[in-house]
Image (cartoon, rainbow, N blue to C red; front, side, top):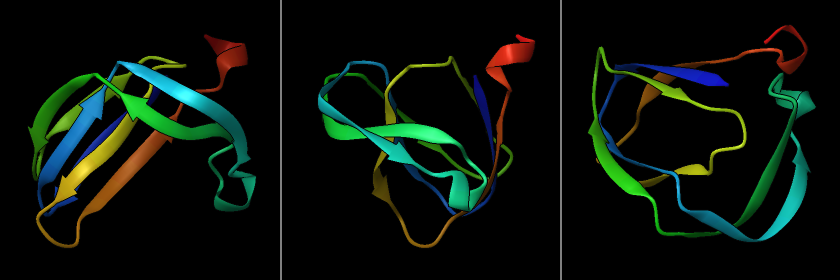
Length: 83
């Protein structure tokens, strides 16, 4: 599970749907752990902005589909071993 807290900027995030042709992407160098990349299909779009918090369940595809400029946000990824 991951929690996103938005500090500055705005845009649109898409959650859910499916990830076609997923490939493992190791983001440990960024302190984020394993992830997947691929082609997002479907999902639900939501506008985000400062002070918004979004909780995304583990394994749920998500991506930014539009940014209105630079954004600043904090991501906390929960350790799946402790859930």
